[in-house]
Image 1: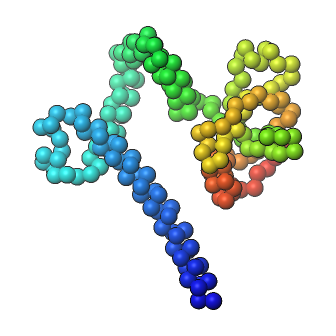
Image 2: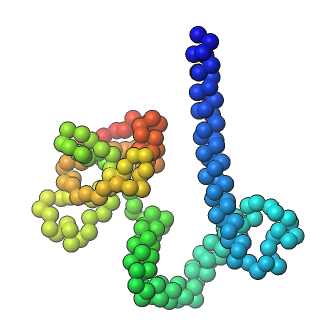
Image 3: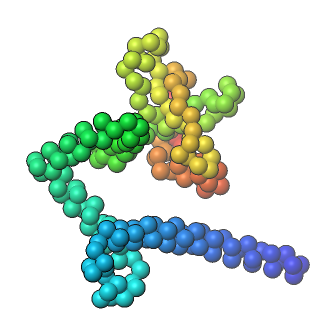
Length: 204
């Protein structure tokens, strides 16, 4: 009886400390990465020379650089410089394919008017008797013309890493649209169903 109580208290403590420790670890790694931006400054300008070794100063510099870059790109001269930069990168072998692909994805995901992952669907995968959560994406025009019925493009993420998955074209009639948000579905996938989103409402 005593051992079961100790075990229960130990697990309760783990449930409190493990998420907190992982959160702190991720934030520490993120701040460390941002602090590396201080290497761009001349040695005489480093904040450690007048503030001492203060961790996190690089975060302010990184956020400032990102904001100033956005402000510069928003005006006419900045857009011209950005177009020149893109044209230079497009002429470099290998870099062109990597940068172009990453830019297209980031433009879609981060743009305020982007259309990435707008709907959460249920699709039959990996066999006709199973259902999987999927995110609706876009069917390329050249692909849609080669399909007889109306199809949708879906991305089926893997668990617990949703950045990997499968990209399929399935008949719209074989899918079911859910009313849960993309964020809720991602939480469900990452937690392997342990942290469940609200009960979904099937539209059709």
